[in-house]
Image (cartoon, rainbow, N blue to C red; front, side):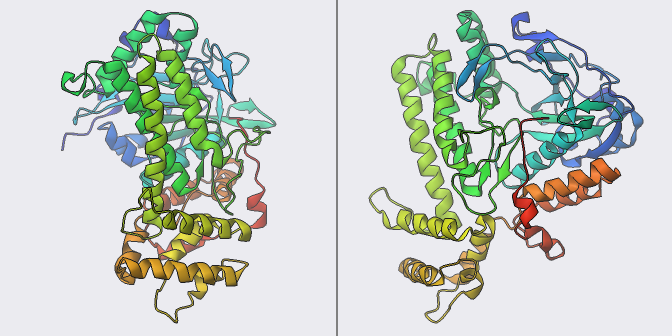
Length: 499
């Protein structure tokens, strides 16, 4: 293992800063007032070859609270556009975040250091460029929760708090979040230059992304057109990502095209939410009055956003290749979702396109869950312990449903399906516990951690949730209370785009 580095010896390799000036504005973070460390993620520190012990230095909070610039960093704000709630907005960009630079570790991986809440940039519009402690904690926890679930995501190194007052719906305290990703290039980067008719910049950006993040795409053995293959790869990665969201019951909340990563990872945690009661029409964003980004709509919105990216790439990609990419998205998203749900049901035999029995088995279970307002995560976790003996009633699972007779009729069909493939309860249970989490970041859990942090300056619950969500599939008996469905007040929490 390579020697761990200090803050001053991180290995910066700022490739995005080498692009033409049209891609960004050079800026300097605005220091927070009296910054202090709220939480640090040692696992993320290792991604940078950074010694986690560095977090004990006052320079750590100072560096990621905007007071000091790290040697080798070249801070900038990226410019992009995007479709927000279906309408094109011509100039967005990093309005409350600054790309400090890119660190390359000893394994050859490159990580953006993207500081959310770093102050005003030329793209802040009427905003103050700040983030609040509440939103930073939510993103910090959720990005690591998603990583624990095996879902592609940005990571989070730390949250830095302050004594600075920030006005939202009420006065809150300002904070910063340092998030990590191989790249923060979005669909909206390409849209910005397309609608400005700056097609040379589209090519420059595509060449950059392909060279940096899609090294196999230029391989001529795979075909002559790297841009068409690039679009296809983005479509497939996006399809697999959204299928994973649907399977685990995650609602992003703001699937604008400027919040879509060209690397197929979850980007920009705002008003997200995991399903509690199963409701396919679940809307986690208080600002989404028409339900555009409701849970069940996410696959269709992914398709819409890929069409936006396709339009931006039309100077480089022929129409037939774009259609092929969109077709691949639909096929892969449906296929991967089916595979994931098959695993959640503990079925080892593959579903075939001609066999509607398994699809109906899943659909009927979800409908039972919807009718009973049954907890999505807990039903699938309880299903791991399903017994297929003829006289087994599976009372613990059955009692999660209002219509118990309907559940027992479904359970009889499920037993038949398991028997048909020779399923063994113990082996199946072990497989299912590896794909059906016991714990997810429920909104009420995040809310409790935020309350303790903002009202008492007690950050212990943040650390507790980080430990819990690092291994969400393990039983963790001492943490079982975190698997409980939310209390009534926890189901009525309002989450908006405000950060």
